[in-house]
Amino acid sequence: MKEQFYYQATHCLCSSLSLEVALQRYYEFIKQHLPIDGIFLNIYRPEHGDIQFLSHVNEQQAVALDKQVKISADMAEVLQQNDRPVIRIINDIKHDQVTHFVAPQVIPEISSVILLRMISSNTHLGVVGFYSKTPGQFKPLHADLIEPHKDTLSLITAFTLRGRNLLKANQVLSQENDNLRRGVFSADGVVGSEGGLKKVMVQVDAIAGLNTSVLMQGETGCGKEVIANAIHAKSNRAGKPFIKVNCGAIPETLIDSELFGYEKGAFTGAENRKAGYFEQANGGTIFLDEIGELPLSAQVRLLRVLQNSTITRVGGFESVDLDIRVIAATHRNLQAMVHEKTFREDLWYRLAVFPIDIPSLRQRRSDIPLLVQHFIETLAAKFNLEKLPRVMPEQLAVLNNYAWPGNVRELINVLERAIIQNPSGPLSFDLLTAATKEEVPTQSGQTIIVDPSHASDKLVPLDTMISKYINHAMRITGGKLYGPGGAAELLDVNPNTLKSRMKKLGLC
Image (cartoon, rainbow, N blue to C red; front, side, top):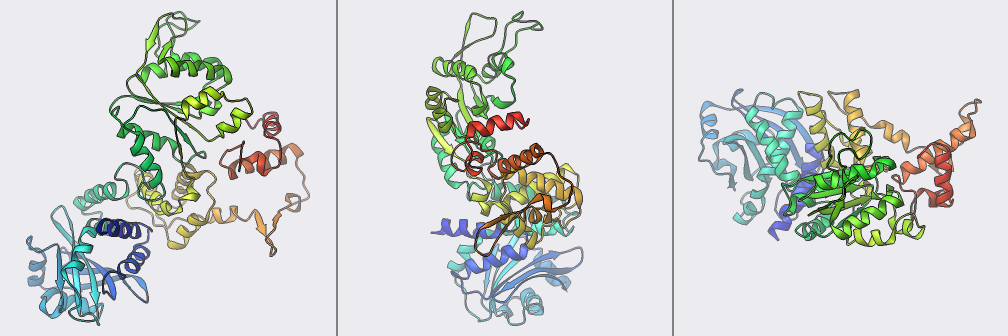
């Protein structure tokens, strides 16, 4: 019960980049369990001799505050005492000198309060106040419920201070913010592991300790490599090599030498023996990304490696024994490819011992705020920004409502473009809104396809228009060509016909 309460409360606090929106959702959740009329958040600023209120949320509103209340030297001395409890119940604010002086200047009707101190590296950062207009409202069980939230509340406060450029002078708090972010957002290194990827992570935990082959299926850019890394990190092979191979990026003529290596003199230019990807991964894990792109001839040789756990280098005769874990991934429908004879059935069964389906970003929209915060921090460091650019609630709504055909990879690109255009923020994603207007629904629910010839009298070659439309279909399906929901099905054309047309147009 208590653990579930903690996770739900944390999810509310981490659901938005806006402090006020996050506090509003948090307040609406915990008021079902605590007799509160509102929440306020303030920070103690010893260098200014005051307490600054940052936010206030109640039944009517959630607002950002910029109210400073000067305090006396005696009050400041009280706040700096190290033995002050982390959480206190004050059922009559007249019994606390500082609270009685400060709180009514912002919330006149306050009568009782639970004060939760935010502490960072033994530094008193400020307090979160859970207040009631009625005296004598709070009991120890109420304090026990909310005390575990102090780190999360410290985190979102630190984000807000950094965003307002108030954290710059305090390197201790900045470091603590980074530590808290790692603890709350990504306890196991996967953003969304307690949200939209929770079911996936249950599967990861179940299979990580075994040596069974894993096949991950999901749209392009949905994070298959991240999950593969998580499996390796949780396995008994952690610390051993993790070799990633993009099967679609290796020319067919080089597949053998890249995967299995070669001996000196095996071909012109082979001046020294080279270990292939499989040999480099020996003892660890090999991640075969885009396994569906391997030609049939290479699939035969890969199957032999998986069956015998040995390889033979190109130009060599001796077998090399392998102790290796194979994780494969694809955005294509391998079962449909088996039916079409473009992927070997025996290789399919060898790889798909434990399949994991990775949801698309639009299937786990609750993770978007966490991902946005994570990537904004990463990009801010990349561009050496002094403070994090803000994302206003209406712009976060744009991100939440977008279809994300390119998934997390597209989200990263969109955020990077927005930061390049306006490094100081706030970030704008209005281009995404414009992109969703290509198709306009009628009142009857049908879809009108905008006729491009209406734009001007200048026409373009038909192949150009077909290329653009096929590219659009591939974006919508996340690069999926075959099977249910694939581009071929949406365009009502045979998959092989569509692929031939794409080759003719130079699209693949």
